[in-house]
Length: 324
Image (tube, rainbow, N blue to C red; front, side, top):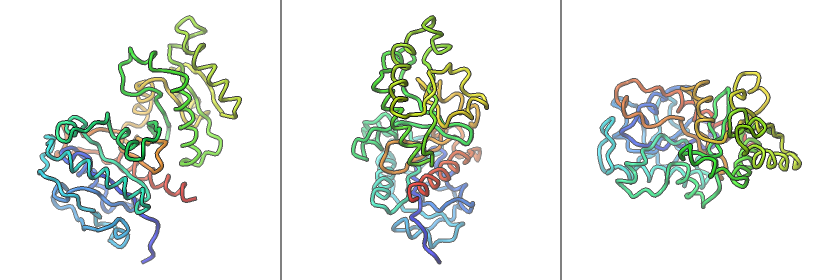
């Protein structure tokens, strides 16, 4: 058998959520080879799996067998009932995945959803979420979150803060950082040598010349003018309510929005099932399904693996792009 590039690794996430069942649903499909990092006791009954000692060993397994790099957990996993006792195992799976990609033994990391409260309760997890933890493991690099599907890529300039705090949190320095990281990520990982980036305004109608707010005039437009002078292909600040119809989307490769819902509502409306969370700015590839643990449907046979499937496909495409 010819041995190809290193496979992807998929961290288990919270085993009481839908992570184990959506991974099992991908076994035997036509996906790029990946290795699951977790406790095989948490997989759905009947899952055909085999233990491997290193990701490369997965390439010798039949396609209908899930390669598992076992990570022992303290507790069993009851669907819909997160157990803080499993927090160290969940964290260990993420750490192992990062170590493998950093060592070149894996092509990229795909992360299944976690529950931050359970991690905090069980292991004093000190990070707001996956993204910040991964940036820490990578040495404290500067990252941004991109949500992507076939129809749209969006990047929120501010993320998990109250809407009332967005105007104060939005700064020229912060927005410039987001634009530069997005621009570099699109070039490196998405084969776009000259990315076209659309930038939304903060206020209705992008402020309408100052009648509905001044951030566009005082903050966003001057920054975009300066970056355009450097050669960035930027449009904006644009009214967010006219940025996401088909003709508008055809004019850019990614849209940068000013706050969480301004970015996530359009992409989840366009493709709720198959959106992918991509962390730009890391020295390695990381994607994730664009959904949470879904405790309410865990173990009921209702989970849709489409987003995880899309995350695996996108991670593989990004890895191929980096390999050239």
